[in-house]
Length: 469
Image 1: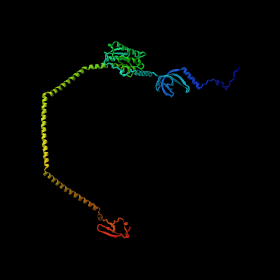
Image 2: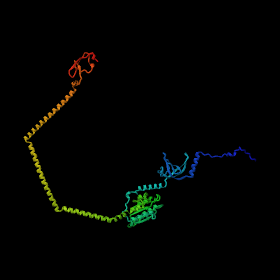
Image 3: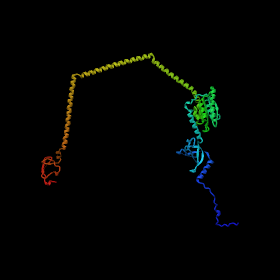
Image 4: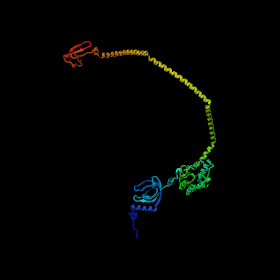
C-alpha cells in the first residue's frame, strides 16, 4: 500500500483524538470526599485552641479549633453524651476526640466531637481541683482538726527519698539548729508510678512503729521532697496519700516543692511549710530560740538581781521614812504644832470679831446722827436752796435761748419782708380798687386804676391805650 501524500496544509496530527470524560456533580464529589475521609481517617484525637464558640437554640455547639498554622470546624450535638462540656470556652486549649466528616451543604470538612479533655497541664489541674473539692467536702481540710506541733520535739519521722535533695536540706538545718534531734527515716519514692502508694505506706509504717514502741515514739512526721513540675509532684496530689495523712495519729508537717507549690498533702497536713528548709526551721524553732534564751540567762538573771536589789533598797528607804513619820516624838510634835495653829486661828478670829463690832458701832452712830430733826431740817433747807439756785440758773438759760431764737426769726423775717425787696429798687403794682397784685400786663384794662408801691410812698395811675400790650 502506498504512502499517503501529505501537504504542508495537513494538520490532522495536531488535533488530539477525543477522550471520554467522567463528569461528577458537586454533590457526588462532596459525597466521595466525605466517604474517603470517614473511611481513611475516621476517629482521631486533635489538640488546639477553641475560638468562635457559639451555642444554637437547638442546643448544638459550633466552634473552631485552631493552632498556629490551620483551623478546623467542630460541632458537638446536643444528644451526644460528652463529659466536660463546660470546658468549651474561647481561648481554652483542649484535646478533642471525634469523627472527621464533611458538611455537604457547605462543602467543608469538620470534626464531630465525641470527647473533650483539657490539654497537658490543664488536665492535671482539673484533676487537682476535683480531688480538692471532694476532700474538702469530706472534712479532710477542716481547721478544727489541725493539731499543734510540740515546741521541743525530741524525735521525728521523716518520709522522703533517701537520695533526694530534700533530705540533705532537712538534715543540714537540723544539724545546725538542733543537733540532738533524733530522726527516723521511712524511705520511699516521691515521683513516678507507684510513688503515692509508697508514700502512704511509709506514713502508716511510722505510725505502726510508734504504736509498737511507745517509749521511742516520734513527736511528728515530716513528709517532704524538693521542687519540680506539676507532674513531678503529682504523687502528693493522690487521694491515697491524703487519706494516709488524715488517718495519721501523729501530727504531720508537709513540705513539698518550692514556696509557690501547693499540693493536696499541704491542705490535709497539720502544718504546711514552704520548702524542706523552712520545715526544718519550723520543727527546730523552739529549741533554736531556747539556745539564745539560755545563752542570755546569766545576763538576764544578773539584771533581775540588780533590779530586785535596787527595788529592795528603795523599799527600805520608804520604810525608814515611814518610821520617822510614825515615831511618837514626831506625832507629839505634830500635835503641839496643831495646838499652836489653833491658838493662832482663835486669836485671829477674836480680833476680827472685835473689828467687825467696832465697824457696826460706827455705822449705827452715823445712822443715829443722820436721823436727828435738826440735821434733817438742815438737809431739807440745803436741798431747797439748791433747787432755787438750779431754777434761777435754768430760767436764765432758757430766757437767753428764747431771745436768741427770736432774734434769728426776726432776721429771717427781715430777709423775706416785701419792704426789704422794695428797698433794693423793686416795686409792687396792684389793682387800686381790689388790691390784687398784678403780675402780667395782659391782666390790665384801659382806664383801670392801678397803684404802684415803692419803698417810700405809692403812685396811683390809670391804664391808657398806649400802655396796652
